[in-house]
Length: 283
Ligand SMILES: [Zn+2]
Ligand SMILES: [Zn+2]
Image (cartoon, rainbow, N blue to C red; front, side, top):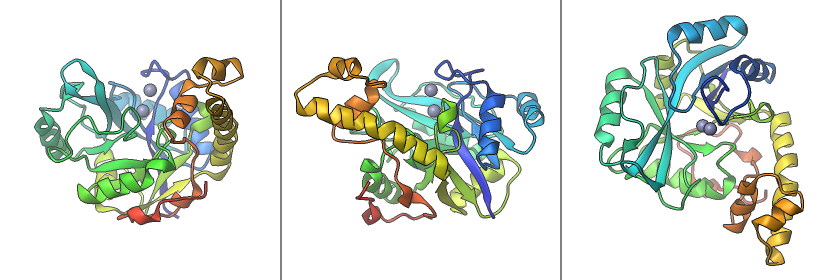
């Protein structure tokens, strides 16, 4: 049995968009069978004492340090924007957001510290990437996450091959229902962020998910996307969607642009490199 790790998770302590305290997120992750979690709050990297304290508070799960930062096309200007997850024992010292003219700084930081860099939820905000992977390609890219649907599977797999990135599955959990949904299963256990980074760069893992959490996600997303489809077919709008019980606007906009947040079971056991032709089709 390998070591199951979710590389992307938020906590209420340091992410405004998350209401659940770290200890509760970690307990849930452990109870769903994860062996480790990387805490990747927005713009905040845990200190070593904070990390150790959490590990003590929730026995039975390893806590690793990471951070989620932004890359944008030019300083302070949207909407061209990408999120990047960094897994490291060394605090992120660079600019945040990183302007895309300055990816050399990211490369230099990653090389010097051994940090792992992951392009988070590609194509979530727009159909192109906000920075040039030819200038800086992160070590890995999310192929599956609560914010990456199977509709971009082939595109992400092809991009990973072209730029020599690994594909990973992680959750980007902000709430308890999603904790532990996706993970990577390492061939051998690791103890530090640097060893974890090395294992991912070497491709010593396969992709996985927690079946009951995945089924619960399908049960949450499917009726919402079906509702969105019905409303779009009648020429309705986001307001109609909300009026008829639509919860998250993102489900509506996803369907409107022809994509989906429904998870797909066929990522289970995948190893790098992933064939772009193995795109899942029957959801
Ligand atoms: Zn967030
Ligand atoms: Zn995130």
